[in-house]
Figure 1: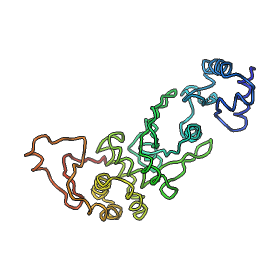
Figure 2 (figure 1 turned 135 degrees about the vertical axis):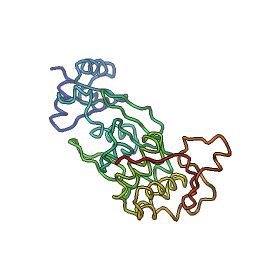
Figure 3 (figure 1 turned 120 degrees about the horizontal axis):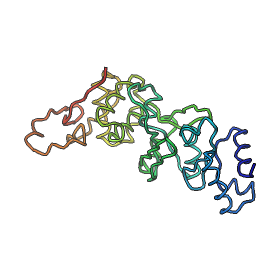
Figure 4 (figure 1 turned 30 degrees about the horizontal axis):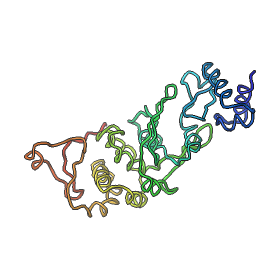
Length: 272
């Protein structure tokens, strides 16, 4: 067995499913070119995956058909390697909190820097950018939870932050009806006071849309927690920002919800 393969096998035996180029070169005394060549051989044998430069995943036999382990097992170490904090959110977080109607077909992560999305084997990872100031305020321990995996824990948005993120990144969360369904499914788990504090970090339009959807789904106490912030709004915004009412007369005729300062420009549908 060649040195890099032995190194990888030992890492797995120690319960670690990844390594960095710097670590491997330090242990094995390989040049950068020699390590890259050895790693490529193992990638071709489906024993390693290479999601980002300088970072390798070690594939167990049970991982090889999918091309990589569940991203929850390695997203933390990967982003630590890139010097970034993160939180798993949107569909994966919603499913973890009990949203039964949303299949997590994509692994979505909120980060404070623009990152390219990743395809690793059958896994698709989508990185959603949040400005550093807002991210730092939102990514506080009181708003986060821990997703248990066979390799440890991943940092996941709490239920309140999950709902705010889904509403903020509405297009990436299945559109208006996708977010409405998540709201119905997990809105009953909201801690109203925690939601009110987390909402202070987000744009008023996000808070108002979420408040309306919570109210529509019957989660009145959670909706009420957002009413004070919504009351500060001066102008109406569309419920669904993706739907444009180009004819002024139609916009005037659209229903307006004064409590949430929303122009109801689309129909919300829930699955039963």
